Image (cartoon, rainbow, N blue to C red; front, top):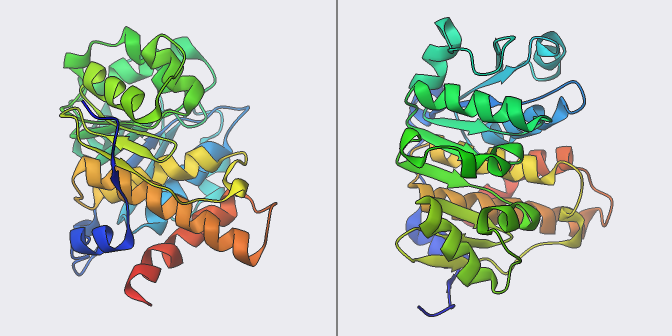
Length: 280
């Protein structure tokens, strides 16, 4: 198969469009972000805010009990759910119901232990969620997870180091390698501006700013992918939209501020970046 990919342009995104927002937050989808740890509580906050910034209607953060109170104060727009003390324990009660009914479940931001991440992902899979987005540590443990236990709609958001883990080798060709990961895991994959569908379709985004290489930037990107997915955008298009919005936000900040903007600035810039397509 050719290593070429369709370029992502403003004209393409306008042609695709976005779902009508409806008249309430319920019509724009529900996201649950599962992650966080004492050493990295901010990752879930960045991801949750980013999902809201691209138009998701509701966000809940499922985090360890050791940080649930602090996280709730930091992002008052989000609901807070406490993960079980024992990783892998069944997700009962409100937590299990929210994960099972969510339009998109993002797993990984801020997790710091591979074993806990693997068992938590298995517990999430047992609730039969509609769509799952995997990021960070959740990608590192994915080869150990039965693909059949995960939903058909699966989006992977690896950086290049995580892509190497998924491939089991060094990267050689961006488009071909991302396509290979998509086929291997039967998932939509977004990696550094290349989005691939398991059927071989691929898109390339040639936009961005050097300042995007900042701590927490990947959490913002993962949240954007999840937010667009929750709004009802097809998984591959949601990945393209999320990657484009993240990159465009970086360009806008680079032009206005220059090198040194923060991931929290990126999250806030997502909304005007998306609206810039319509000239608003």
